[in-house]
Length: 527
Image 1: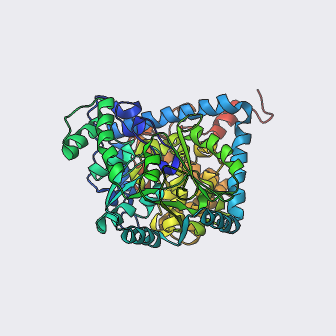
Image 2 (image 1 turned 60 degrees about the vertical axis):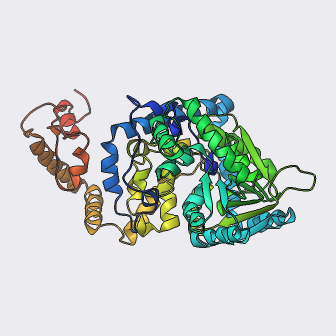
Image 3 (image 1 turned 30 degrees about the vertical axis):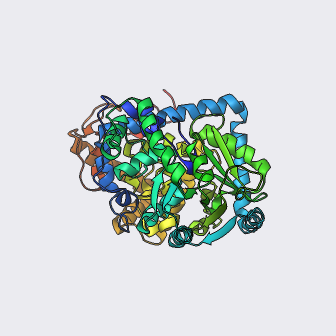
């Protein structure tokens, strides 16, 4: 029971909480329950105005923060250790190489798309192009109807979440089972994934036990091995009965027309090999030029995602099964999904499409650790979601996302393909300001700061005003005191209220550094 990578997602372990990593919590009683449905969590009404409300709830949820913080910290430590142990002083060089492969592909995406389609069709794969989520879903539903499908087994795929495929299949009478254990439990609970790799990082094994007892009629147990056995026995029957298999894809190899899936369990391969018809739904940005480039990408993906040298299963599908092969689908389809990705192909934003969905930026992000994935109100949360989601679903629909970052740069340091996420966040903020998407008062404050900090007299005056007001609010008076004499504000008002919702705000000292320096040193710089 381990975690999967990227679009093929995660199971159990720290992500599921069935007894590993963050799962037990302080007393093992948390169930990660959210009053919103899975659809509402990831597809709220647009424009999304509820991020601040969700964050307020998340920061008060002690168990949620413990689950998320413990699991992400463990993965982040494992990533750093594995990358350093493997590549030593060449870690940055390897990341630059992986990033350059992806960037080159994006710079020539039209050419590699044509090459992939040509080579995939040579192997017998039927390739479809989908401009948006609605078209991608309709293509999949049409195939299912044509084949008279009754049961679909679907391995973890962020793109199928993105287009709401599961709901679509069930609406036409196709029973659809999520075969990734974490996703399967979320499906039973009517919940939604909160992490790119470990989808149920916000739950623990108590949640699993309750879901299996309630939905499957299993005897209540919190033993991880017993829970795994219950799921395995249930899912194996579904694999044998399924007439349609669905998956995503970690990489598309233009040179061979192959779809690459990386997993740490057998469900991914069963989803692609047992059913007579298989559909792989993959974003167009997953392309790489050649098979030789796959080695580089696999090395950084596993290490960045779960701290492993390599995933347990690296499955490359190149068309339906041939006459000499014993297993595999009789018919294979690949749906190449745009759904806003071409909006990010501009020179200033193209690098964000390098993302290989390893989740490293989420695991290292101090904001994600505090608020969890559901606070973002989107399929892609965390740092990468904060830049990618506004491009995919409209910046005016997700005005808060680019601001949900401290710009500490931890995500940039962790990224295995060197996406400069802080730079992209600033770019989004600039665009929002230029197009007046943010509130007029915010623009006024920022403009005032720009003017004040661009002039020495105004800068000194603003500092004095800040000192006086802050110290009065904290109960400190502007009389005497040493340079280190601070006060603490427990509750600010107006725009500053957010600073004191979670912690006290330190007021400036009674003497500024400049005042202290002048009083301690003569004009020549020393006594």
